[in-house]
Image 1 (cartoon, rainbow, N blue to C red):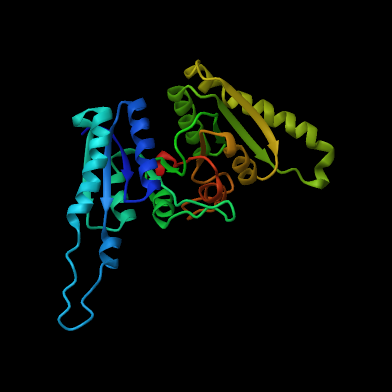
Image 2: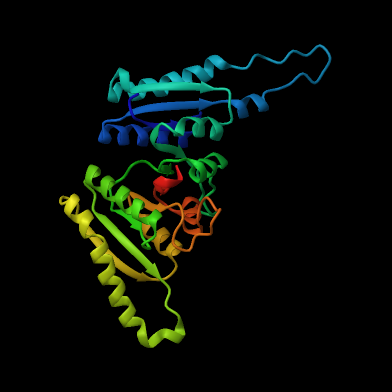
Length: 282
């Protein structure tokens, strides 16, 4: 079966942005797009019989099917007929996407819009899929834009896969890559801060040597930054085309599906966020 990027759609503007992002990514990777339009939640909200003799209108499956068909046709117009497919699923959206994610190279979902007066509001679908999908998940809240690909690393296995994903994304899009290691020095160790900072910079440079050789066209910047990883990456997301992190970092707690950094980025980053899960967890 042709490898595909999976994308969830509904009737919201955010879903249309996610669809366009997914088709762009599929075109860059020579992949197909599989579109899921789930409607169990719509069905639950549909009016039920509450008064004697009242017959509720039929669920507008034709309208939902047209939404799906239009999304699939958009993919086919860009990628070719054979590279666009869809499923109208009588399932909860997160369940339908997770059912299909096993065969996907990537899952793309939209997030809810946010106002300038409040923190980002992430939909439950995006949260559940990002936490449980066996492949990388990109949560999109804006149109594709230019800017560096940012990846956070801490040397953990999850972040190594995130770095690889980020190099691949930068290579395909032609955007520069910035690799960031964040650390928080303790006041009692002030005398050794400069030494530790130098050692971390040397380690970071050495850890990227193999990737630089594999992706020689990628312009790479690497930095060691003092501060909380979530805060630093959220700030960098303001000018980024994509921020990439592993699902759990070195400090991750066994049993948790996502670490605090990935969760914070999903809720507060300005750019799309890619959550990359370690392959062994698939």
